[in-house]
Amino acid sequence: MSAYRFGPFVIDRASYRLRRGSDAIELSPKALDLLFLFAERAGQLVTKDDMLTALWPGLAVTDNALTQVVSDVRQALGDDSAKPAYVETVPRRGYRFVARVEPVAGDELSAAPAPAGTPHGLRTIAIADFANLSKDEGVAWLSAGIAETIANALRGFTSVVVLDRETLARAKPNGLKPDVVISGSYQRAGDNLRLTAQALDPASQQAIAQAKADGVIGNVFHVQDDIVQQLTAGLGLTDATNRRSHPQRRETSSLEAYRALTEGRLKLETLNLADVPGAIADFERAIRIDPDYAFAYVGLAHARFWRFQASRARPRPDRDELVAAIANARRAVELDPELAEGQAALALFLASAERRKEAVAAGRIAVALEPHNWRHQFRLGIASWGTERLEKLSRVIAHYPSLAYANVGIAMVYVARSEFDRAETILRRALSAEASSTDRGRFPGRGLNWLLGMIRLAAGDVDSASAEFERELAAPAGVMHGDEYAIDALNGLGFVRLAGADPDMAAIQFKRALERNGEHPIALIGLAQTVVKRGHRDRAAPILAQASHAIDEMTNAGRPGDAMLARAYWLMAHGRANDALEGLKKTLLSLPTGPAGWSIPIEPWLKHERDSSTYAEVVGVLETRAR
Image (cartoon, rainbow, N blue to C red):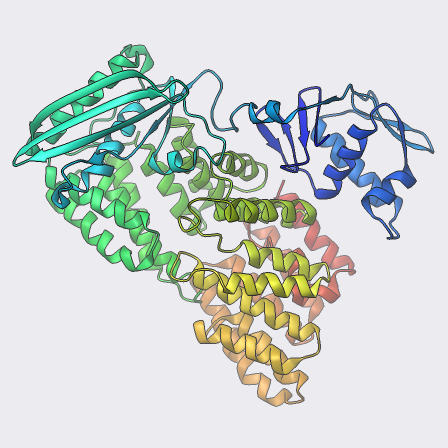
């Protein structure tokens, strides 16, 4: 059998995961393999030799490694070794799985509950773009605009979960099963506009509610309101006690402002940096028309944040754009404190400004206002760290398994905890989900291959690491974080060549990174080391001086975590390993809780320090911060 049930758990070999109800439980590959062994031999003695042969064939492994894997399994199951419900210790012999185990058929797995993020007892309603029957390009923007207006109205009710237009496109491949799908169309004839909509039960294809409204294009808001009222009545959402408090300044009375907002959003949805200037112009036009349009300020904030993100790999990123993004998000929240989108955006931007306490507070407000919106969970997850990040981003990938940024964010926590197997499992699942996704271009998997390469390099698997770095470089260009991860991948290839005593090829890789960003301190220090290895130590000094200046710029730009790592590498290049490690420890202890230094356990330039007591202290601080 490929799947087994015991207690509230199901372990499935096909998806290679453990699940409790609808919640996926993260386990390392070794722990999953052990759990499969236990399930297959339930009630029988599984000796230590059996476990070593199954998990580490042909390798010499200490008992400590085996004990740790058993501990991981017990922790995932919530088991108590003193009073075991699952894993019983047989002294001096091995272990016995004492729970009742039942095989699970494939049809039962396919009928399993929807993934976490679709709460029990709440109706899930998905809204599709409306069809433009008249094919009139002048009103093409209404396709998304109408759907978004209906979604915003339905989010005001406490008894439903709204899947937005993008999530609906991924619902079927990701296992999400909406209870209701709202679709519709519109048709323009001169100044007249007709809207029709229906709410369908996707299982029976029976209409639950229908709506139709006519009006002139200038009164599109009234026409939309008619549609919303008919749909909510048909869906039984008319009880006032079922509605959240409704803010007053979310929408606008101006058709032109509404159109500008929608067109700006559509440009941002392409996730193409080339479309950002046009989006900014759209949002600014909406604000000129209606200076109190909260949604337009949120859109402008996101567009300005994109500009900041595009510059983030440089030692001097464009912080004016980040300041502007925060200011626009704050203005949206001032106009409408209950606009969850505004609070969530503010959380993301404040986190990038290293103001994590404020960021988490804003993110928690957004989630409290709209607890089932995956975007708010994502932004709070990025703002937070440790267990809270794992919880929030795990909910995101339940909706969107291939979302690279969420998966990288989870893997970062596990790397900081030195749980490399768990990090690798997350990354490989994400890459598998992306490969089978129908919308691979939507949020391309930037960073997944680079981080997997770094983990493999730290494990000494140079060939696999090189292959992952090359895959990162082959990913699409022109998307958010694209240039940043390409530089990281090139540096990774440089470290591979340095480790292989090939300074000439290493220099080529570091120079390729510097062609993208001539002030990247890690690439500069790497290049200096290639010069030294080729016997030209005197030529390395000016390169290291340039790197030091770039690190100072990082510090002045408010990037203490990045500067900390780069300065430690600079000290290592000067033969001052102890100073580098002491500096890492001191800085980590002084910084607020957050992801600063998360990559230390896999940094290749620290490879030869991993047996030192000071390095162990640094990693201990990291692990504590990541809990």
